[in-house]
Structure formats: C-alpha cells, structure tokens
Amino acid sequence: MKKTLLTGLLAAAFQLAPLQAVEMCWIFGNNMVLQADRPVPIWGQGKPGEEVVVEFAGQQKKIKVGEDGEWKVALDPMPMNASGQPFKVMAGSGSKSFTDVLLGDIWLASGQSNMAQPGADKSEGGDQLASQPVNPLFRVYPVAYNEWAPQPNTKQFAWESKVSNWFDWKQASPGTSGVPYWFGSMLQKETGRPIGVIISPVGASNAECWIAMKDLEADPYFKEIVENSKKRIANSAEASQNFKAEVGAWKQRKAAAEAAGEKFTERQPHNLRDELAPRWWVGALYNARIAPLRNLSIKGVIWYQGENNAAGMGVSADDTESYDRLMKNIIASWRKQFEQPDLPFHTVQLSMFSWNDGNGRSPRDPNKPGSWVLIREAQEKTANNTPNSEMVVSWDIGDKADIHPKNKRPVGERLAKIVLRDTYGKKGVIADSPSYASHKVEGDKVRVSFKNTHGGMKTKGDKVLGFAIAGADEKFVWAEAKIDGKEDVLVWSPEVPQPTNVRFGYIQFQDSDLYNSADFPLVPFHTDDLPLKEKKASEPQPPAKP
Image (cartoon, rainbow, N blue to C red; front, side, top):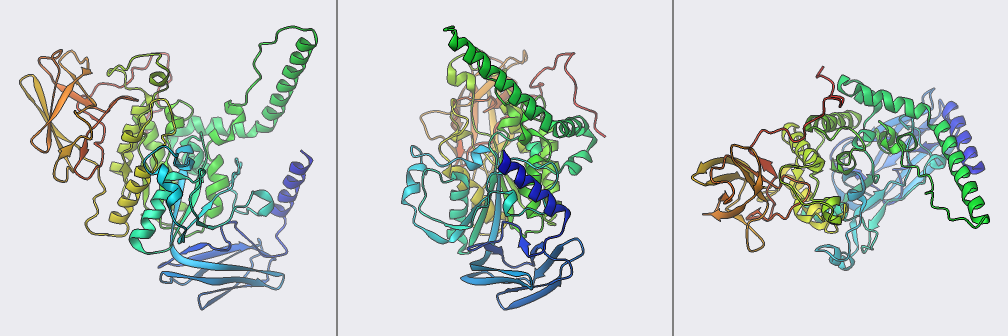
C-alpha cells in the first residue's frame, strides 16, 4: 500500500511539473519496429526550452521542448529495412539509445481475452506452435497490464506502468498469444517485411472501455452509459474502501464461527461489480493502453471482442444497433487518434459458445437465438458498413463449453489473408467467407444461393449442418440440407411442408458445417425479419436516434 501511494504521489508530482530529463513513451525501446513508408512521429517529455536531437537511419531532427514539457518531431518517410539500426535521442540533461531497430509495419492487436489467449496444445495450430522457428523479422510488444486510468494517459513513464519490451517472437511457448502469433507470422512470411505487433487486449473487458470518453459522449445515444461511468469513476476510491471493509467483516465472522466450532458457509464477497471494475467503464482502458500511443504511426488494427457485451456486462446485447453503433464510434475514435481516417480495422466475429449447452441445462431452441447472435449480427453490420473494415467468421472453431476456443490458427490466418489482399494488394489471395445471396421456395424445400463461393460450397463432414426452417407460423425447427449442384443448398423438414424462411448458424451454439471451396465458413444469416428478443414493457428502451 505504501509503495502504491508513493508511486501515485510521484506520478502526480511529475504530471504537474515538467520533467527535468528526457523521457519517452514505453513503446520506444530496443528491438522495436518503426512504421516504414510514411512519416514517423517521435515524441516525449523533457526540460522546457532544452533542445532535443533525434538521430536515426541517416536523419537528424532537432526540436526544443515546449513550456509544457512536451516535444515531438517526425522523421521523413523511410523504406522498409530488415537490418537493425541504432536510434538515439539526445539532450543536455540526458540521452536514450536504442539498438536493433527495424523499419517495417506495425499492427495493433486489441480486444479481450480471446485476442490474448494462447494457442492451446490440443488443436490445429496449437500443437504446431512449439515447432515454429525464431523469426527475427517478426517482433511483438505485449503491453503490460495497467488496469485503468480516469483520464487519457499521455504522459506515461516507467513508474506509472509495468514496462514490457519489444522482442523477436521466439519459439512459441504455452503462453504465446495465438491469434497475433499466426496473424503476424503469416504476414511476415508472405510480405518479407519486418512485422511488429503491439498486443494490447484485456480479458473480460467491455467494448465501451476502449473508446475515449469525450468521443462516446459526443453521441447522445450513449448518454446514460457515459454518465454512469463518470459517477463510478468519481466514486471508485470510496467503493474500494467499502469493499475492503466488507471483506474484513466477512473474515471476522468466519474466524468467529470457526473459533466456536460452527459451520461457516457464507461466501466471501467478490469484486465483480460495476463499481469495482474499472475495465468496464467508458474510456478506462483507452486511457491507459491506447492514449499513450497517440502519436504512433501504425499499419492497422485487428480486434477480437464482444463476449463481455454478449454476456450482458456492457452496452446492451438486446438489440444489434447498440453494439454496431458503439463499434463504429470506437473505429472512428481510434482513426482520429492515430490521424489515419482510413486506418484498417478488422474484427473477428464471435465463435459458437453456450454455457447452457456446455452444462446440459437446456436444449438448443432455434427460436431463441440468444445474445451471442445479436453481437455477431452487429459485428457483420459494422464490417459491411464501415470503409476499410472486414470481419472474419469463426463459428467453426467454437467450443460450446469453453468461451476461449483452443484453435487460434485459422482466426489469425484469416485475418492475415484479409490484410494481404486489402492492405498489401497481394494478387490471388482469397479472404472472404461465402454469404447469403438469395432464396426461393421450391415445393416443400427452400433453395438458398450464396456469394463468394469461389467455385462451390462444401462440407467437412458427412452432411450439411446448421440450418433451421420455418413456415407461415414463424416457428423454426432444425432442418435437413444438402448441396445441390456446386453453389446452392436445398433445405427442408418433414415438419414444415410449406416453408417460407431459413436460418443458418443463428443460435449461440449449434453444430454447423458449410464452407466455400477456399475453406472459409459461411456467414450466419436469417431470411426472416422476426425480432430476435421481445422486450418486456417495463424494460428501458434504447434512446432514440439523435
């Protein structure tokens, strides 16, 4: 406690008074990758009025520290360079020297735990991690955990954050983050360029934690959630003290019961509450983990998040509009911060998962899609309606009882293929999933046609799985299906002699099996326009559009 208090006082003191020596954001260090082919901002803090000299790759830039203690220069665009070079920042009050600095492409990987989770040892790709050789042109910077910040943390120094390091992605270990590994590894091999991946996800975090408060506040749709977060931030210290007192009282009751020989069954108070979980508040993780990178030049973003919102822990999962609108705000906020209006921002659609199915508590009902489906649909809407944003489908790697699917390789490589096609312009790369194009009723069956089949549809098992069908009564039942020709699927059920609508993959978890010829899974879809969840009259409705 004393160390934490002292750290906070030191940080506060230095935030109020300009530094008397050169300091830089923690992202600068040995073995780092700088963005090639565009201006490279270099920034930091120092003694007001002092001259700072930056030297790298034959360039020298000079700047005087401002009265606010800030300085920033931009190196001229430089071509890719796979040979490590020295990097120096010099001033009268001190200097910094970094070694083995490469010029290539920087990608930012963020979201929640599935972006951080390792590739497990029992899956395709997972059992191959240990055999991967050291690649000195593929480097990562895992952002050390810094739980939250009440304001954008643009002056983050060593004593405010556990500092990590850039390193070559060495032979993968059980702790290797699977999605970033397979993403960056494929990019480096296919492009030949140095690749740097900044890994900055936080497990069990809501999407709204990753946007600047002022940016979400500008959208009246989210007024209530912004105001609630402001109140919780303001009351966080008091809530923390109250919780400690609550735990202390519980321990006393437990000790007293044990001393009296009595059975004590009361559970210990837990801290999974809104008032004690800063990572659930608007802006909290943006402030601590994204704002410090405010000047960095990057190539793009990969994003894997949504589980927490689907579980009802954040912005409503009762409708698709809220999460879709939130993600569009996040993308716009990050593009503004990095001063790249067309910054690539590619997402992973949630995989199949269901606590209930995993624990055997309830049967799967095709008429009750669940919140996972709402988030998946919102993710598709965001990708379809946001320039330079694509989505990879991942239902086929899901695990009905494990929210962290073990097979990370297909996800990382599907993201990489999108980037190779769209960002690097690599010819012949297939990167899209098949998707619904049209349907028509043919007697007691429905014929469904698809886009992006790339030569045809196929299954990996013995039969087509994942379809449900309904008639005029709008009651869906699980259906039989078969590929007809190469690109169409016929769907039917004896229970629905006069079908009208079809659904595919439209539930939190179900066994599904349908791909295009390039092994990309079909995008979940529905042809009906039924509301996915009926709200009770007493439930608060989403605010009207401004």
